[in-house]
Image 1 (cartoon, rainbow, N blue to C red):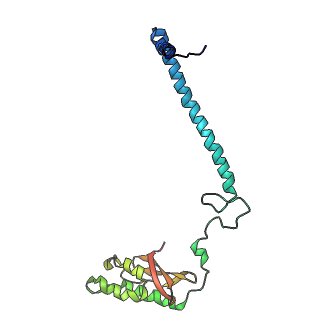
Image 2: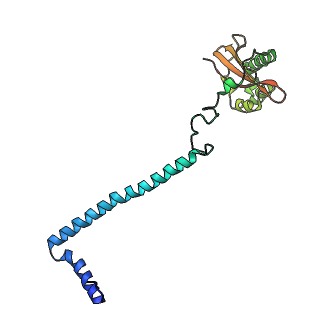
Image 3: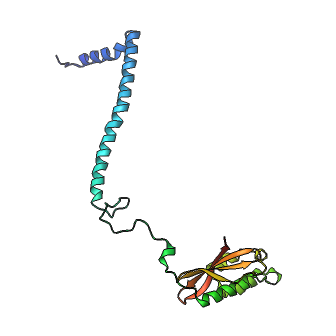
Length: 200
C-alpha cells in the first residue's frame, strides 16, 4: 500500500535511518554494507567510464585513418609516398674534386691563423682572418685566445673530404692535426672557413 501522508513518510524515514542505531550488530552490518557499496562503486564506475572513451577512441581512430594527412596519425601502408626519414645533409651534396681556390683559401687561413698578432691584439688577428672566414665563424673566433693557437704548420694543407658546397682540409701543426671546413658562401660563391676542429 503506498504512503500518502507526510506523517507516514516521516515514519518510514525514521525507521530506515534509525535501524543502524537499534543495536551494535545493526551498526556493524550498516558500516560493512556502506563500505561494500563504496568499494563496488569505486570499481564499477571507472570501468564503465573507461569503456565509453575506448569505444569513442576506436571510432576516432577509424575515422582518422581515412584522413592520412592529420598530425599524429600514421599513414596506412602502401598509400603514402613520403620518405620514412629525412636524408642526411652529407648525402644531399654530391661529391666533387676539391677546387684550387678553396685550397688557396684554406692555406692562407691556416697561415694567418697560426701567426700571432702583435701584443696578442685579438682585433688585429680577426681583421687578418676576415677575408678567409665566414661572418658567423668570425664572431666565434673572437672568443678564442690567440695564445692557445698552434705556433707552426708541420704538414701542408690537404683536402680530405669534398662536396660541391663544402670541403674539409687537414693541416698538421706542432700540436697535432687540425681539420678546417670551408663552405661556398652564396651569392658570390666564394670559399670561406666555417669551422675548425682537432682532427682524429
